[in-house]
Length: 211
Image (cartoon, rainbow, N blue to C red):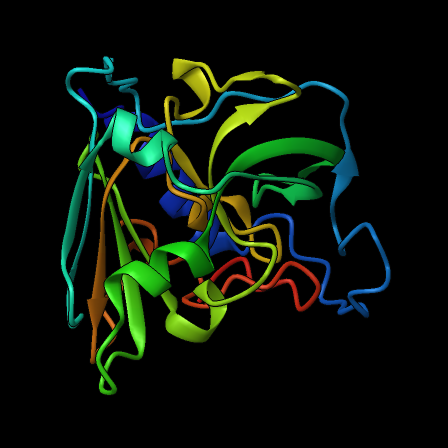
């Protein structure tokens, strides 16, 4: 069940502009404005951590695509895997460096689904009913993955396992946990936090925390 008090508090943060410094920074600056470095991985969710067993897992790629896909966990794990290292930045002010990931590149999924020419946007749908949106060109990047390992171990349930989105160039709320569907659209569709006062683009170096 969603934590209504937490959601209301974070909406209030957006209204207040909490944590905003008013500064921008070049992406070559590793720590974005207003962030602090941590060495653990804080757990943040909407109050629900769905248990997605291997039997329950499925991933759909659909919407404005030529070849819609639906795969189970075995089929997902049979796709080409890539290892990568990247930082992550949460809108709640923490950043963590040098995270080792393993997963399927977004570009592998794009090659499977083949978005139609009119597709310009992507919406991630999660098992806890969470949604978030990005542009297609933000998804079509070499550092974007659907990941299933962190630090050489399967991503656990608290952090969105068995499979979650990873978009390291954006604040972490765009990297949906427990992903079940990737929808390609011609029009934009703001997601859970974007309709509650959070920025539609979410660039940490431009400090796009809130709308």
